Amino acid sequence: MPLSGIGSYPPTMQEFINHWTQVNASLGATPLLLRGAYALANFSTDRTNIVNAINAVIAIDNIKQTASGNLDWLKFSIRQRPIQFRKVVEAMLQGTGYINALPVAPSFSAVESRFVDPLEEMRQLWVTINADTTVPGFTPPITLAGSYAVATFTTDLTALRITFVTAKNANEQSTLARKQRDVLLKPAEQRMKQYRELIQGRFDPTSPFVQSLPSITPLPGSTPEPVEFLGHWNKPEGLAKFTWEVSNNSKLDYYEVRACVGSTYRVANEFSVSGPLRGILKYDTKQGLTTAGAKAVFRVYVVLTTGNERGSNNVLVERS
Image (cartoon, rainbow, N blue to C red; front, side, top):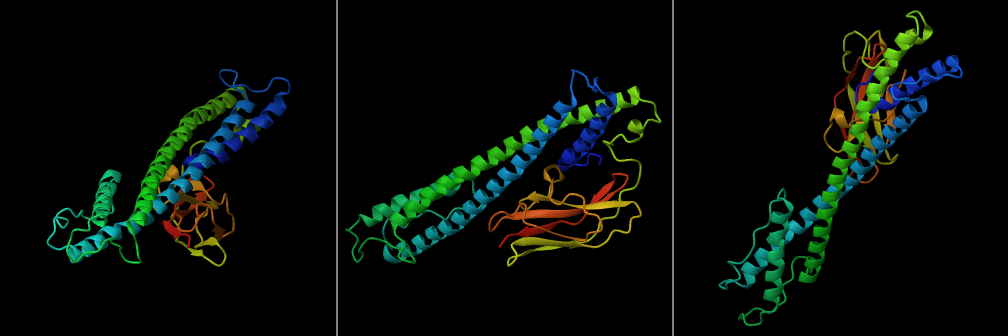
């Protein structure tokens, strides 16, 4: 199959490995080497490294998504407390200087410092108020809804700080994993080009080895029409279930389900979920949806015998 995205590198490279193996069998004691004494074993190792790098990105993206979800939940929960705190202080300590010292609840989308700093100001003010026994008609300590005390707020604020760091680290690791993956791709593509050129130079045009050379780019031809794609999370089965309409393209070779972890589909980040599906119009999976609340976006591709392909509409699935 021609190269069409990151997920296509392993299967395309495997086609070259299969072809190279046959060529070496015909050459006997003098196996085919590319520039720099680069052998089939080197190319096989490079493929393994790319597979591992692709899988590493998928794994860290799952961690990143989990950390992001945990952070959003903590932010949502703790953000209610400044609102409640303000109401209690305004009701119980009206006419005191504490009213002017009340912090405003941070914006949900605020960066870490702008989100956490008002909460720390609130914590310190809460401790101060709890220690003040001089206000007429007021008996400390202050508690919020659900008997929520400053000690619990302190614990929650500490957890929030830790989760901010965890989410930031996961995001940085995701970026690094992508760079480590992407740096492997161009050399592999160059080796495949070298291999094609060498085969065409070493063998006659009518040779089976030339005639069966794997492609790197699609053959001339039109891009197929996309098919309609439907899917949802089936909680009883613990699977995402997908169906799609049939493609009527006369050059249809197979369908392939691909995905991106998270809520956004980027071709640069897509990975193969299903592999080639021939004569099949449905597929079930939980790949990319490893934990409750995890999200992934899926597409089904129509792939032609020429290597031309077209992705369907996006389907966002959230695991419940």
